[in-house]
Image (cartoon, rainbow, N blue to C red):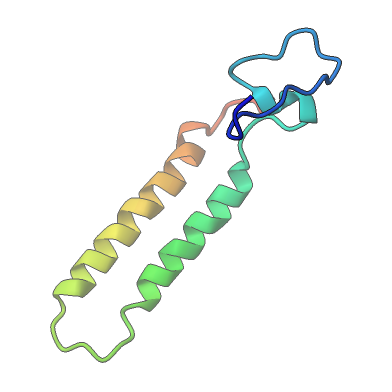
Length: 87
C-alpha cells in the first residue's frame, strides 16, 4: 500500500452512503445558523470599513454594494419560507 492511501477501517457498517460519508459519525447536514451568523458578521465588517482615512468614495460604493448583496442572500430564505411549516 502506498503512503498516501488510507487503510480501510472496519466500522461495522455494511454499506456507507456515498453522498454522506460523515453520517456514520452522527453528523449530517449544514450548520445553517453558523453560516447566517458569519454572514451578518461579514456584512457588519464591510460596513465598518466605511470608517477610514480615504478621500475618494468609489470604494464605499463597492463596500455598500457587496454588503447589500450579502444581506439580500441572508434575508431571502426567511422571506421565501414565510408561512411554511417547520419540519
